[in-house]
Image 1 (cartoon, rainbow, N blue to C red):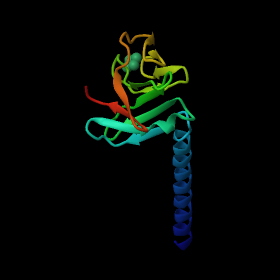
Image 2 (spheres, helix red, strand yellow):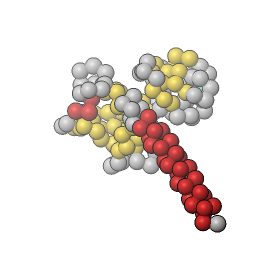
Image 3 (tube, rainbow, N blue to C red):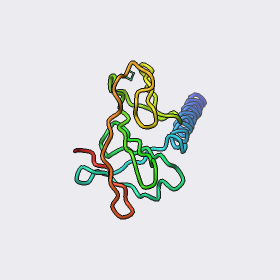
Image 4 (cartoon, rainbow, N blue to C red):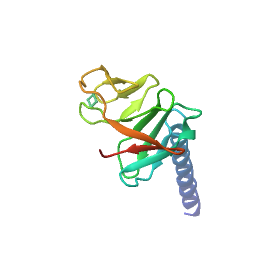
Length: 144
Ligand code: FES
């Protein structure tokens, strides 16, 4: 009886460790620079991020607090920025950045880095948000 209990605890602990390691590995993968998502609080229908965050990467993926969709924010030329909702215009699936634009994993639509449709079934470009600079902050207007 004592041996069975010990073996049960041993096996249960091993299963927990393996499961925990699996979650840790998947979390580490999600934190890679290409897929890192910055969560931002919403204030007055805007989210803000420091302009310095574009020093090393011209594109940031952000998610406003409570939203299920991400926004790709890209520094275009000079002090110009573009913010695109990463929601597929076909059937509202979350898009992922693929290095050359955005891809929908549901039916395969692809968009250019500036949100134009590159491959259907989507026919409509991605939604753009207005942006403006305020001192050292990029402000993204979530509602017009
Ligand atoms: S939902 Fe994206 S292609 Fe259909």
